[in-house]
Image (tube, rainbow, N blue to C red; front, side, top):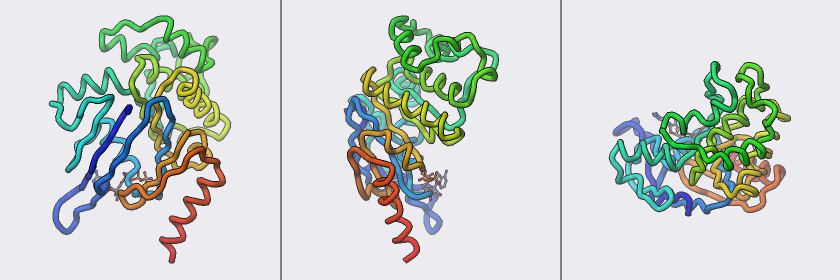
Length: 243
Ligand SMILES: Nc1ncnc2c1ncn2[C@@H]1O[C@H](COP(=O)(O)OP(=O)(O)OP(=O)(O)O)[C@@H](O)[C@H]1O
């Protein structure tokens, strides 16, 4: 397992105004797969991702990353585990404007004092299709190219798992397709594990499986998703809401 949660509960606030964002969620994230997390607005997708990735504390329950229970770790050890075992891709690309694409890709490892494995970085750069853009700065790249640099940065340290939060949220559909193709290829060709939160049925269809959240619980799962099947499933949430 790349990640696992058992009885994961996250509540915000206290008493009458308390919001239970996650309600005793059990989830296993298998290695070498791409998993999409979907659900209506407010269903707990981002909270689930943040708790799985050790970016947010949990109220109850346990979370493991690559066999280590992160819900027991001290802050310092959690920070180290996040740095060494997890890659992140966010909606905003978060690239440093003064650095080249290549420098952005290896920056986290440079900061951590880790030596990049040159063969691996080469493979990642080839897979991301940016060989001829490596000396460019972010401003000289399209949005899709910038997000592919951010994906390559997440992959460069060979993490156990990559969490992507709406990675195509700021992109047009063509650039989004480039990024999603790359993320899927990182799983199929490089053996990575990717968990992606998305609103978009087409984006979700790039995953091997989709997990559907509703009101802080896992309410459905789908293997080999297609955009149509995901869209149909999402419409059933709307039907419940409006009935
Ligand atoms: N910091 C916070 N304080 C209080 N309530 C919060 C906080 N973060 C999230 N929530 C609440 O927890 C619930 C789940 O939120 P979350 O952001 O995980 O949902 P989501 O499915 O990612 O939504 P969206 O698709 O709109 O991004 C919502 O009711 C939200 O209002």
